[in-house]
Figure 1 (cartoon, helix red, strand yellow):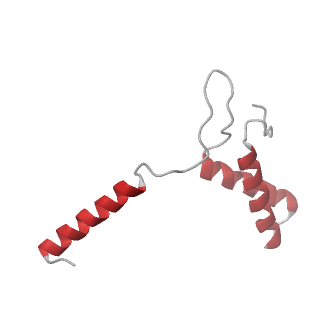
Figure 2 (cartoon, rainbow, N blue to C red):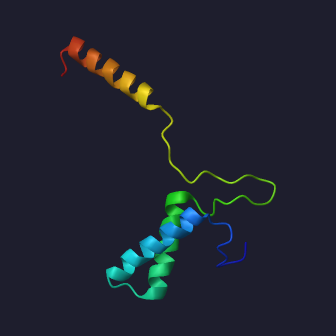
Amino acid sequence: MARGDKDKYTDKQKRMERHIEEGYEARGVSGGDAERRAWATVNKQTGGGNKEGGSGRGKRDTSEGSMSHAERSRAAKKGWETRRENGNG
């Protein structure tokens, strides 16, 4: 990927960049600097371009938790029971 080339970014990442850039411009940051900062923010949050390419596969651009809602709920109830039994809550 050539420097400055945005082909490997997903549409979602490009939308994120535009939204972040508008926020910087609303705060008075100049256009070029706002764009640079916005892409740096997107890279920090998503880890760079996530579109498929080469022999590898694309990376997911969501940040889903590893536990399901039911698992989190069960763990919370178990913790609550433990604290109640131990007198810590």
